[in-house]
Image 1 (cartoon, one colour):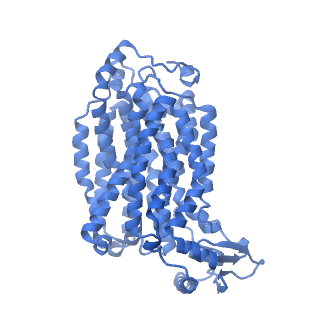
Image 2 (cartoon, rainbow, N blue to C red; image 1 turned 90 degrees about the horizontal axis):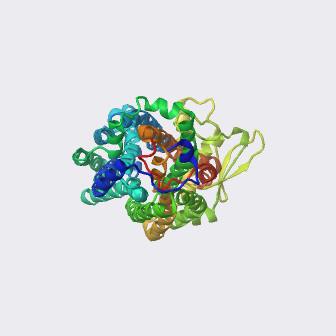
Image 3 (cartoon, helix red, strand yellow; image 1 turned 120 degrees about the vertical axis):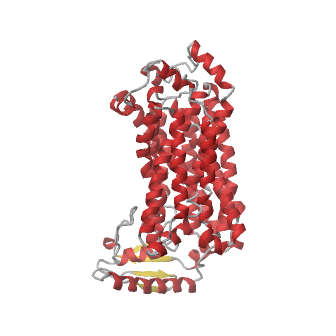
Length: 568
């Protein structure tokens, strides 16, 4: 198939398969179910390793970042969640070419071993109290290793299934791997709940949190056993027998303009939007846990409930893409996520923590400061040292999850925080050494917290006031659109690249695109800290989604029905 045909939206969607390809497909169709189940089970266990970190983020912060100020511990916890996204493209650069040269099967066999071992090591890692700063550094290192492994996993598993599946079922078949993230999250939540129930809350938070990580060893061995029983992709084997494999997949994928153009368009027109949609759908977990501070058990039930709906929606979206096309389903998901995000997040705050909402209405918090002394607060790497009175005030309010408004003070005027009719002056930290600054900051935090209590602000969301069913409904509604943006994406991308460079060309943009969503939690916290609006970070999500919607609509083709054997 020529490059012109690949990019021609008007090209006939009928599959053009040579006789040998038809025979191979007929033989392979009967084993498609086995391939999908085996590949997806392994991917579920790998997704379990990756997403297990999310439900345990509050405990992770207490175990590994306890030596930091609360706001910095919050930032570093989000960073340790996002660092896997930074590492993924490098994993794609390593494992993508390996999959195109050595084979799909052996590549994702290697990635599951790396992922499993690094997860087990997290479960064995000493806390900050035991070994100090080495503890968070080692944690970051293990999260990077997880990111490297996952960077080669998804593209390899999707390509493997796609090269087995007939064109008319490829969207549904490849959606199985996309579903693994949701299934992995469900599995992680079930394991966490079981451990909490068996050990009790105190024991679980003290040491029992390690058990879900250590169980990864069992899942890894099971995954290796399953994947060892698989055969190599028939499309890949046919290419190798014909001597049409690429000797330098990286150079061919990114050194030739016709392929690089495809990579760039799918990055900004599809993958960036999907990444942000996925992050937007899952960010309520961090909002509920770290900002709204709902009961951990209720949070886990909420995640479990919406994840079941999410899995069903992913299956339906993959099936739909085989009937109406990949492009319309994905783009509709982008638009739906952008339109639904803001009202859904507002509803989540209302139903999770109504007493906070009432306190904000009765005694609003206002930071009054000279705007020239206020920074933008974006600190994804936790290295900035915020010393101005404005920054101290904003971070003190934000780390408690309290929405607030800003009011400009005269140039050179003092900074203060108003809680209803109560006014608290804020000190300027410039010129203070670290011990003196820490002492003044603790004194201000104590005064501010006491004033909040007097004004009726609760420290945590009351379990009896949290409406779990409403939270499940809201998150499920948002994630229906996320499923539409995610499930057909794998088939859409696989069908755009030639077999000889498919894993390489898929892996790098897919994992680079993960950056757009991976830093959403850090961006959202910075936006909240600077503005006082809990939902300010959603404007970033909406912006990226709309950019992808426009680029995808104008420049990306529909690929449903395309023969992978003909795309060489």
